[in-house]
Image 1 (spheres, rainbow, N blue to C red):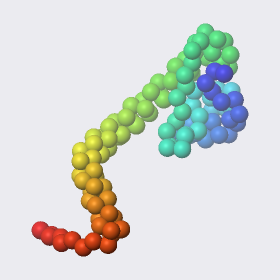
Image 2: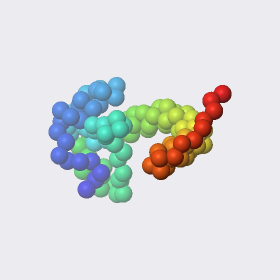
Image 3: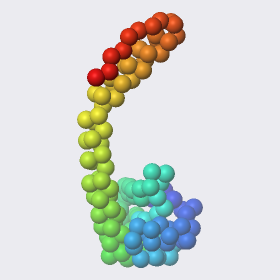
Image 4: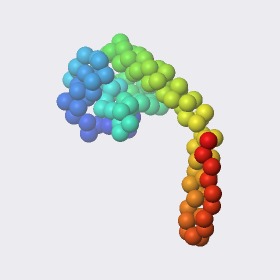
Length: 121
Protein backbone atom coordinates (compact mmCIF):
# COMPACT_ATOMS: atom_id res chain seq x y z
CA UNK A 1 0.00 0.00 0.00
CA UNK A 2 1.33 3.43 -0.84
CA UNK A 3 0.31 5.12 2.39
CA UNK A 4 -2.81 6.64 0.83
CA UNK A 5 -6.02 4.90 1.78
CA UNK A 6 -7.74 3.95 -1.43
CA UNK A 7 -11.19 3.78 0.17
CA UNK A 8 -11.45 7.54 0.42
CA UNK A 9 -13.63 9.06 -2.26
CA UNK A 10 -12.96 12.17 -4.27
CA UNK A 11 -15.49 14.22 -2.34
CA UNK A 12 -13.78 13.56 1.01
CA UNK A 13 -10.35 14.37 -0.37
CA UNK A 14 -11.60 17.54 -2.05
CA UNK A 15 -13.40 18.63 1.11
CA UNK A 16 -10.28 18.02 3.18
CA UNK A 17 -8.16 20.12 0.86
CA UNK A 18 -10.70 22.93 0.98
CA UNK A 19 -10.85 22.70 4.78
CA UNK A 20 -7.10 23.20 4.95
CA UNK A 21 -7.20 26.20 2.65
CA UNK A 22 -6.14 24.50 -0.56
CA UNK A 23 -7.83 24.36 -3.92
CA UNK A 24 -10.34 21.54 -4.39
CA UNK A 25 -9.01 18.70 -6.52
CA UNK A 26 -10.48 15.51 -7.88
CA UNK A 27 -9.83 12.12 -6.27
CA UNK A 28 -7.16 11.23 -8.80
CA UNK A 29 -5.33 14.49 -8.09
CA UNK A 30 -5.38 14.04 -4.30
CA UNK A 31 -2.43 11.81 -3.51
CA UNK A 32 -1.11 13.60 -0.43
CA UNK A 33 -3.98 15.37 1.26
CA UNK A 34 -6.85 13.60 2.92
CA UNK A 35 -9.39 14.03 5.69
CA UNK A 36 -8.25 14.99 9.17
CA UNK A 37 -7.77 12.40 11.90
CA UNK A 38 -9.66 12.34 15.23
CA UNK A 39 -7.40 15.04 16.66
CA UNK A 40 -8.08 17.31 13.69
CA UNK A 41 -4.69 16.92 12.05
CA UNK A 42 -4.15 15.93 8.43
CA UNK A 43 -2.67 12.47 7.83
CA UNK A 44 1.01 11.98 7.08
CA UNK A 45 2.00 10.20 3.91
CA UNK A 46 4.91 7.77 4.35
CA UNK A 47 6.28 6.33 1.15
CA UNK A 48 9.12 3.82 1.02
CA UNK A 49 9.51 3.53 -2.73
CA UNK A 50 9.27 6.99 -4.29
CA UNK A 51 9.84 5.73 -7.83
CA UNK A 52 6.97 3.25 -7.60
CA UNK A 53 4.74 5.89 -6.01
CA UNK A 54 5.44 8.42 -8.76
CA UNK A 55 4.77 5.79 -11.46
CA UNK A 56 1.34 5.08 -9.91
CA UNK A 57 0.69 8.76 -9.28
CA UNK A 58 -1.92 10.21 -11.66
CA UNK A 59 -0.69 13.78 -11.24
CA UNK A 60 2.62 15.33 -12.11
CA UNK A 61 5.70 15.76 -9.98
CA UNK A 62 5.08 19.49 -9.51
CA UNK A 63 1.61 18.95 -8.03
CA UNK A 64 2.89 16.27 -5.66
CA UNK A 65 5.69 18.58 -4.47
CA UNK A 66 3.17 21.42 -4.06
CA UNK A 67 0.88 19.21 -1.96
CA UNK A 68 3.78 17.97 0.16
CA UNK A 69 5.01 21.53 0.69
CA UNK A 70 1.50 22.56 1.71
CA UNK A 71 1.35 19.71 4.22
CA UNK A 72 4.80 20.54 5.59
CA UNK A 73 3.73 24.14 6.18
CA UNK A 74 0.58 22.99 7.96
CA UNK A 75 2.57 20.70 10.23
CA UNK A 76 4.94 23.56 11.06
CA UNK A 77 1.97 25.68 12.10
CA UNK A 78 0.58 22.80 14.16
CA UNK A 79 3.96 22.31 15.80
CA UNK A 80 4.25 26.00 16.65
CA UNK A 81 0.80 25.81 18.29
CA UNK A 82 1.45 22.57 20.19
CA UNK A 83 4.94 23.26 21.60
CA UNK A 84 3.90 26.15 23.90
CA UNK A 85 0.97 24.08 25.18
CA UNK A 86 3.28 21.16 25.94
CA UNK A 87 5.68 23.44 27.75
CA UNK A 88 2.89 24.92 29.87
CA UNK A 89 1.62 21.44 30.79
CA UNK A 90 5.11 20.31 31.77
CA UNK A 91 5.38 23.30 34.09
CA UNK A 92 2.04 22.40 35.68
CA UNK A 93 2.97 18.75 36.29
CA UNK A 94 4.45 19.21 39.83
CA UNK A 95 1.33 21.05 40.99
CA UNK A 96 -0.92 18.42 39.43
CA UNK A 97 1.04 15.64 41.15
CA UNK A 98 0.70 17.39 44.53
CA UNK A 99 -3.02 17.81 43.94
CA UNK A 100 -3.36 14.12 43.11
CA UNK A 101 -1.48 13.18 46.30
CA UNK A 102 -3.82 15.37 48.33
CA UNK A 103 -6.89 13.77 46.73
CA UNK A 104 -5.53 10.30 47.54
CA UNK A 105 -4.85 11.40 51.13
CA UNK A 106 -8.39 12.75 51.50
CA UNK A 107 -9.90 9.56 50.09
CA UNK A 108 -7.91 7.41 52.51
CA UNK A 109 -9.06 9.56 55.43
CA UNK A 110 -12.66 9.36 54.25
CA UNK A 111 -12.52 5.57 53.82
CA UNK A 112 -10.97 5.16 57.28
CA UNK A 113 -13.60 7.53 58.69
CA UNK A 114 -10.82 9.60 60.28
CA UNK A 115 -11.04 13.29 60.95
CA UNK A 116 -8.28 15.81 60.39
CA UNK A 117 -7.74 19.54 60.59
CA UNK A 118 -7.10 21.79 57.65
CA UNK A 119 -5.74 25.31 57.54
CA UNK A 120 -6.31 27.61 54.59
CA UNK A 121 -4.17 30.66 54.03
